[in-house]
Amino acid sequence: MYDSFDKGWFVLQTYSGYENKVKENLLQRAHTYNMLENILRVEIPTQTVRVEKNGEVKEVEENRFPGYVLVEMVMTDEAWFVVRNTPNVTGFVGSHGNRSKPTPLLEEEIRHILVSMGQTVENFDIKVQVGDTVRIIDGAFSGYEGKVSEIDNHKVKMIISMFGNDTVAEVNLSQIAEL
Image (cartoon, rainbow, N blue to C red):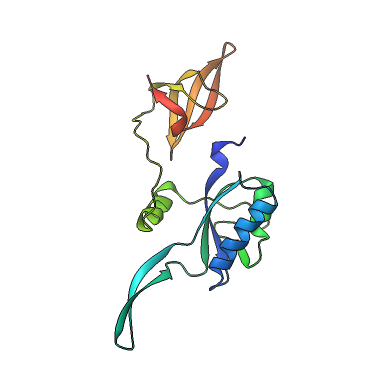
């Protein structure tokens, strides 16, 4: 399928006022180009504000970040091409130009945004530290046990013994279980 390390939340720049149209176009293009496995979610962060107009107080949804759309995607060359060529998308935040791929948001940043929108976020009950031995329960290395050598933002590097040699395996935190 895909490497979990290529998956992340990215910020798209759009023309202000076109956020909903970009979301609609992007979801349509994901379907048309068979990219539904790579373009996973598209969100426009909103907030409810109270506005007084003609003596009446109303609650109105407004964009928290006008001109920006969040997209959860697997950053393949094909998905990147589809997203950046969507009408009214002017670019990615975190791209350094010269056709370089952008940097995803940090887990804490997207978690804060999604929670503030009232959405659920993935939570892990596993408490693993560097040096712990764990079992891989999902993915290409399923069934292997190894020692954790590095933990970075829900991603784990570990040393497993494969064919008599020590090999570094990179897995998502959701793909391991404590022994």
